[in-house]
Amino acid sequence: MNTNQEGWFSGGDSSCRPEQPVAAHPCRLVLLGPPGVGKGTQAELLCRQLRACHLSTGELFRAAKRNGASSPMMQEALDTMQRGQLVSDEMVVSMVRERTQCLRCCGGFLLDGFPRTVSQAEELSRMMEELGVTLDAAVSYELPLEEIVDRLSGRRTCPSCQSVYHVTANPPVVEDQCDHCQSRLMQRDDDRPEAIRVRMEAYQSETEPLIDFYEQAGLLQRIEASGSPQEILAKTLRLLKERGVSEQCLTG
Ligand code: AMP
Image (tube, rainbow, N blue to C red; front, side, top):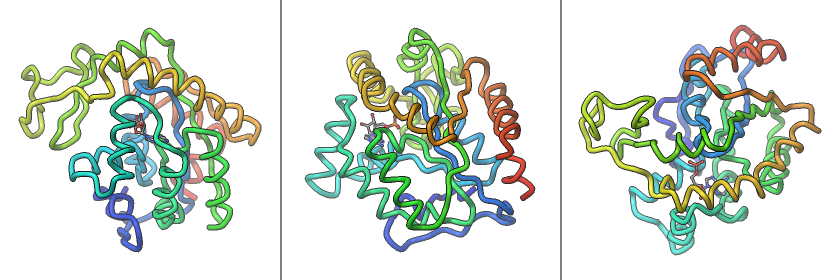
């Protein structure tokens, strides 16, 4: 895994050297699932296992927020994100297009949060075709709505090292304090109840159709996302292996 994710965060020509040895067959996955289903946690666990890079478009926006929006267009995107709405396809696609070196990286990738609309998925297919690379699977994590709302409203994140906690399921040792760097934990603006509702609506109307899109492409792998993060990881690896994906990625 490229722990610094330099290429993804800087864009343009900057690139990072994948950890050695890279997998004989780089694993290229899209992770789907409603906000709060645990996609980000699974992405990190899977990346370590598959030695691929975690590419999150949401993290690009959060990094822009920490560093100060670089343009009026980015400021507009950050305002949109704060309301829980989706940023325009045009803006997100152009950000990913600036980072195509990450899509063709010999270390492989796990896309988390992109694509989020059918139009973004079509654009991703076009980009990958241009680069001569193919997707191994689209993993869709699924959970009942009530459980998702509970997970999201209890989520707390560290503004310094980005560690993620949950007030009941995964609390820090000291209340409201990061175990790793002792910073004060925060609730993401878009994890507040009013924004959660908007995000769930956006997911249902814009992102759920992607499940059909990838099913028709023969790439969909559904996963019931209940249990501990380690249990969900084990289930994901087993199902990917049954499709012949992770075995290729790990041993090629
Ligand atoms: P995430 O961390 O993936 O939940 O993303 C956080 C927020 O960033 C989303 O609620 C959107 O406002 C914005 N965002 C991230 N990725 C996308 C995308 N592919 N399309 C549109 N908006 C996005």
